[in-house]
Image 1 (cartoon, protein in one colour):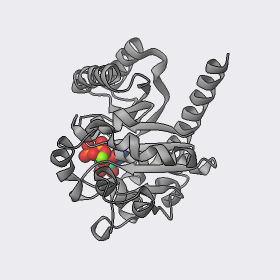
Image 2 (cartoon, protein in one colour):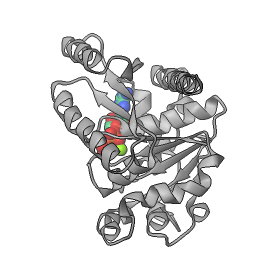
Image 3 (cartoon, rainbow, N blue to C red):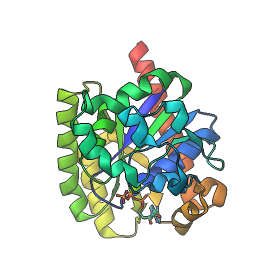
Length: 262
Ligand code: ATP
Ligand code: MG
């Protein structure tokens, strides 16, 4: 059964999508079966996976509203090697349409039930808001990866996000927990970065990934070619950092299942 991981932070531009695409491709490189779900009307994860968001016959919107089957909307990322449930601007309407539907918080979870066995990992790219779409992601997920930049305001936003995750866990999805916090666009030479990093370690302890993602131009260039950095420039520091993250994510999963068996 797949591990379903939402990549979420209501703050914009913290590398949610970059993490989703590059973690997906890195997990594929270690022979995991991966599905990436784009749950953001911006459709950046769709484009970055090499899927044309403007010519979609069906998208995640149709899956959420029940207008098509999961299999009709699924695409394949040729360069990434993972499957994609794509999104485009149509998804903007979902916020309103979902409000009038039964089980509105569970539309995504229910759509995934029949296919969870087909994957090792399902990664959900969330929009930069705590909207009904994000609620659907957090209701469907087992855990959350929070990408963040080590800057002063990041810590404030983090409290809101952690509170939301706690509320959703209490009300909708008791299994939900934080998988890990990921420091992105990381520059160890900056004293503010080191200071914020230290505070994160104190607050979150082992939840903070040891792996950090450096600022790397290859990570910013790759999506315009519809590729993960691993294919665009395998030796780049960005590509190597996401490979290290995939290894750390898999290590934690193995530890969790060992603990569950004990
Ligand atoms: P949004 O909230 O709009 O969905 P996001 O959190 O998904 O944004 P991304 O789109 O992944 O963030 O990244 C924001 C910008 O920063 C993009 O232009 C991306 O290419 C760039 N970027 C992300 N990570 C890095 C990095 N490690 N080094 C350099 N540029 C990066
Ligand atoms: Mg994004």
